[in-house]
Length: 102
Image 1: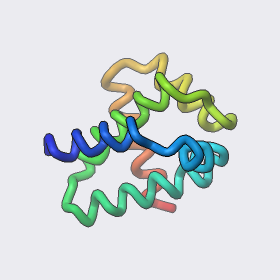
Image 2: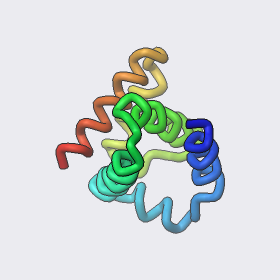
Image 3: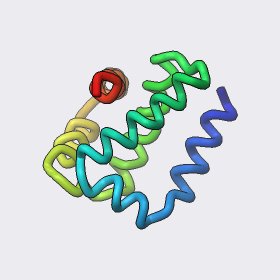
Image 4: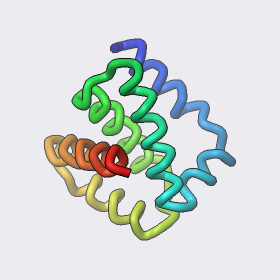
């Protein structure tokens, strides 16, 4: 699992700015991108708990490094900022369920 963490960290650090802008410009695109990545994780055999941990890592990065591009992202960022660790973890689980149902 450490290998997965390293890959996530590396991907976040080296993410193409133009592609990132495309993904974050529209909330539906963001959800689709997240859904695609969740499907890859599921095919790799990652549990929902592990996927939630990775989602937390990505959400934390976005909260600290990216300006929201729409109302939905702004709301998520505000919830993330005020949430305690446990609440953030639950929000990550809810994000996963949201995109898995898409």
